[in-house]
Image (cartoon, rainbow, N blue to C red; front, side, top):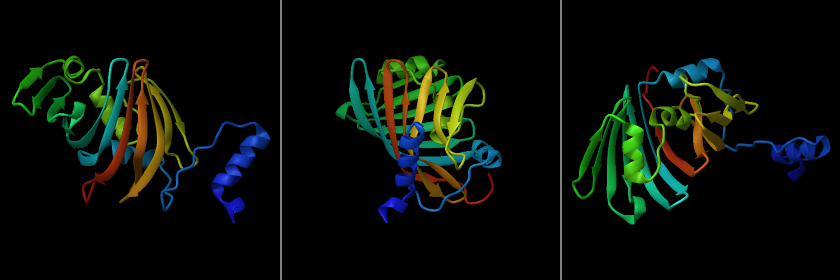
Length: 203
């Protein structure tokens, strides 16, 4: 019955008690994300996600396919079709970035945020975004986090950005984000993750 649906009960409780709306994720088997699970996710040396990103800023908006591969201290991002054109191959670490465009242009810099801003129109803290994608706070900066009843991150305020999580998916041992938005005062990123790939063993 519809009235027995958890979302229906949540809405009724919110109306009766004057509570804010409930965060409900319909993602198959429920898995509690305790501190140990979050530690495992944060400790992963390699992973890959395939999805899409939409960007809206004060000056422009665009959509692109996104493949993000993380390998220890290096992240590789492949943006297909930003601005309706070509592709960008991005290799970035803490103090180095290399961006190769479809037309053969290559840009390198020791300031990743500055170069990204010049290439794609906005600055984004890639080291922090790597954690946000996994549903984790960036461990090297102060943050304010909110979690759902399963211990999954639903809202994060950090480094001048607010990340909100609309949906999770279950993959191997963990529940990981499927839809999220990351917003600051001038830019909004919407990310949809179609596939996560993690190491088969260990973390």
